[in-house]
Amino acid sequence: MLLGKVIGNVVSTVKESCYHGLKTLWVQPIDVEGNPKGDAIITFDVVDAGVGDRVLVIQEGGSAQLVLGITEPSPIGSAIVAVVDSVKLAKKPAAG
Image (tube, rainbow, N blue to C red; front, side, top):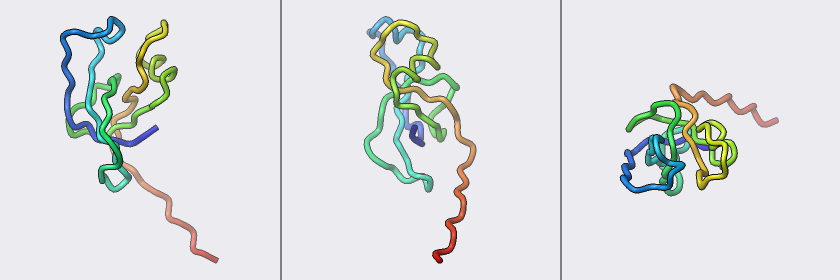
C-alpha cells in the first residue's frame, strides 16, 4: 500500500471494457509529511476521492480487482481504498 495525494482526474472515451463505470484518478505518492515520493500513478477509485485528497492505494492487482468488484481477469493493478484524514506516527523509543 502507499499513501498518496490525488492530483487529477483521468477521462477516457475509448477504453478496455473492464474499465467502464470506474472513476480514474491520477495520484502522486507522498511520504507522511506530504512530500512527493516517486512517480505519479493512475489508479481507480472506490471511495469517491477527489483532487487534493490524501488517499491510501493498494497496488496488488488481485486485491484491487476484489475491491472494485471485478471477478474476471483484467489489467487492473491498483485501487484507492481510503481517504486519509490524518497520519500519526508513534514516537521512536530512546536509544539505550
